[in-house]
Every structure is written in structure tokens, then in C-alpha cells.
Length: 292
Image 1 (tube, rainbow, N blue to C red):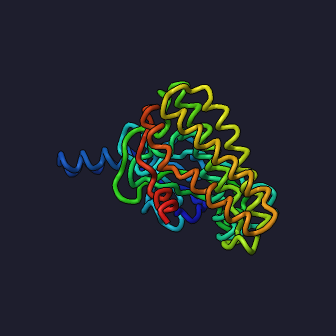
Image 2: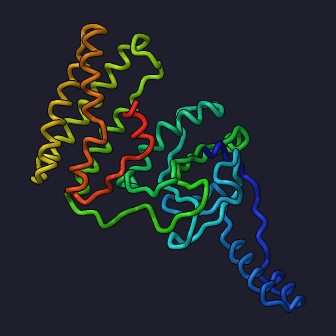
Image 3: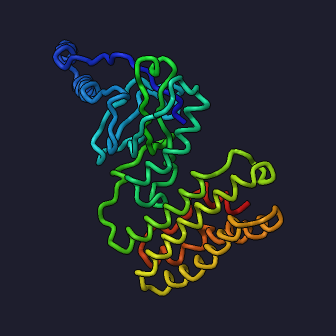
């Protein structure tokens, strides 16, 4: 993960100086190198100036602890990352610390990113969600912004992650499906054990049940065989989430939650996704979660 950003003036290499130096050498390789260096210098931007949609190359490793500036590149060129969402840390008078800022970013970035990336399953293999957030020093200067990015630690990828070619059925399905998993993870209690926060887990179940109800209404308008079958299964799953939310004791919650969580296993949506001509490879993190 990208652990912070700090404001620092960027040094831009003068094209004139670079080309004059090359002229003295008179070497074709040196000319090409100078042109490449000048091009890179002109593309340098402060991390603070990143906007949603920008494709970029970090000046250091993609997972460096702090980044001061990046090279903005056209998305059709090979690049290591793309900004897919932004938000401001509000309601905090004091710096929340690295741990606090990380928790905020980890909770918000998956949600913000889906406003840009319609289908997380379509993200290239090896590209993961990272984020830039304020350091204590930049916070003191008024920095509150978090930039959510998809980046590749090793190698590069081509093209923008934003897909404007999706049809109505695809958009409807993805909007509902994404909302279900957003509700699950955005409402995940901090307690690892249900016994330590039953009320929190029941609140999570209520949020997922509500998101599933909305998803089911959307799926009703997609009359394709596999999607119809998925809707029938999710109808039962929604009932299990409602039972978990209304559970009167721990045993009742466990019974309902087991059925509910299994019911939203992403592997069970592959047939419908294939029918809708969407990506069908379950993301590694999700596959691991439901495998265990």
C-alpha cells in the first residue's frame, strides 16, 4: 500500500539545457535518451494534483512508503497505476495517524473506486487497490485528500480501467452486485468474533439484506435464464440475511449467517456473468475469502 504523500517542489529538467548537452555529445543514443528524459520531466506532477482518471507512473516503487511526485502519462501508454477515486477526510481536527488514515482509506477506497471501475472483476491480473493519504506533515498544511488508485507493483498495464461500452443489463447487474459487497465490507464490525459484537454483526446483516432487496428489483428486469436462476437463489439468500439481522440469540444468528454468507459466494454468480458477457474470473481476494 502507498502509505503517504508529502508536499515538495518538483524539479523540472529544462528541455533546452538537455538538448544543448546532447548537442555537445553528438550521439544518437544520447539524443534519444535526452528526449525521453525531457518528456518524462514535462509530465511530472505533484501527488496533490492527481485527478480521478489520471494514469501515472510513480517516481519510485508503486508500494513506496512516501511519494512526492508522479509522471502523468496517456492511458494508452504502459503505466503502473490509474487514479480511480478521491475523497476528503472530514470530521477530524487532528491527524488520525497512519493507522487511522489507513483504516479510512481501506473502508472508503473500494466504494469510491467502483464509481469509476464498474466491474472489479475486469481489472487486469496483478493490479490491486492502493491509495495515497496525508502524512502528519502534509496534514499540518491542510492536506485532507485521499487518492484511490489501482496499481501494479510489478510491470505495467495499458488502457483506462473505465469501461464506457457496457450495455443497460450489464450496468444494472454490476450496480446491484457491487452494492451488496459494499454493504458487506463497509459495515464489517471491527471485532473478529461475533460474540464480541453481535449487535454490530446484526447491523451488517441488515445492511446487506437491504442491498440485496435493491439488487433483486434490478435483476427482475433482466430476463435471461442464468440471471433468473441467480435471482431465485439470491431471494433465498436475502431471507437468510434478514433472519440474521433479526436473530434473538447467538445460535440463531450463526445458523442464519452461515446460509447468508454462503449465498453471496461470488463463484455462484459466474454463470450469470458469462450470460451477460461480463468478466468471469473471481478476484483472488474474493476467491480466498469464500474458499476458507
